Picture (cartoon, rainbow, N blue to C red):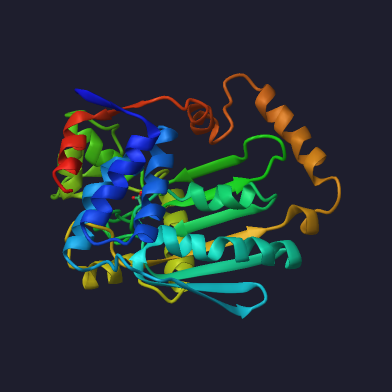
Length: 331
Ligand code: PYC
């Protein structure tokens, strides 16, 4: 694979220009470009520039409002809602997350539902935002059907990512962000692009046969991770991100989507919890004692550690050269 070396500023500018050239105003483009740049910085390529052509398709087809003005409302002191005005998710998140953190600090637990958004990004930016403010965070979103519930060969669940972050004052938070599919669709698409096979158990072809060919899985179905256990967590994500927000379940998102290749309209649930109010004084030392035991075990890595290590490198990143050319051609 040939690569082009881009600084983080170049990555941000490339993403911003592609979005603005296709109908985003500066605020909406800036919020998406920031998320894309942070993904590349952390080594999460499947959430980085790789997503820009999909964002642009959704702008060009008119599905997504590039000039969205998300609106925040309080349904109760602890229940917040952002109507994303039909835009991409990042500006809607930026509109609601500070208020969510404030509510959790005051009350102990608070929830933010986001509707009328198009989520195509990682979820750790939401949960790490909370962990950086000494709160535990949970975020999840449903997506278009691509995963067969355990026992079935028919897709009904989305890849349904879920992220959890735990604050560690003075240290990088514990933070995982994972598809509840055996593999995120972005990674399947990257493997197909790069001509690589994927591990057995990732998915089935269009006839329901197991395959390790990512191109066949993209036309067939993914499987949940961990059999019926992952399937149950994926079901929970559908219920939290759609049942609890009033937005579309994955199957409903697919019915109303125009299939332009960009993200469908959907919902997101973000929950914030205050260890200071729930566990009380001393929570940091109590948890760090546990973390010391965990990290003393040979071979154990704290979730998020690799991303946080990558983050320390502020130098240029090697980006797939064909992708860079594709994005430049969109400007
Ligand atoms: O990474 O596939 C994904 C995704 C779907 C919705 C948000 N992110």
